[in-house]
Image 1 (cartoon, rainbow, N blue to C red):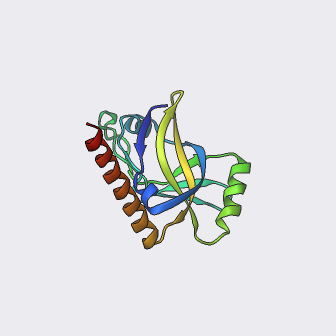
Image 2: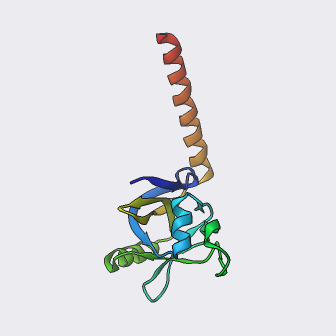
Image 3: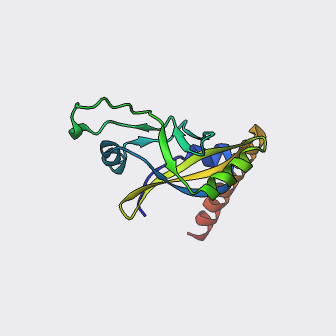
Length: 151
C-alpha cells in the first residue's frame, strides 16, 4: 500500500474520531497523474448529497502532461467516492452532530486501485493546538537531553 499523498494539516487542526476507506472515481489521465503524486488534498473536504452519493470537493489533480489537449482538464472538479450504503448512512448520522466534518487524510494505492482514507473529525480549539505544540516541544527537548546524556 504505497502512500501517494498525506494531508498533514489534519493531524494538527482536527481530532480524528473515525476512519474510512473509500474508492475514487477518476478519469484515465487523472489516475496516471495521481499515481505520479500530482494530487493536493489541502483545503479539500467531503460532502454527502441527498441522493446518497459522497463527493470529494476541492482536491487538485494536476494535468497529466502526456495526455495531450484533446479534452479540457478541470483540476479541481468534484470526484465521486465509493462507499457502502451502510458507511454512508453511518457518516450521515454522525454529521447530524454539531462540530463534526469529513476530511480526506491520505491517498494511496491498493492492488492497482487508488483509495482515499477519509476521517470523521472534530475541529480543535486554539488552546488545544497550543497545548499539543507545547507537549511536542517538551518531548523533543527531553529526547535531546537523554541523547546528550547517554552519548
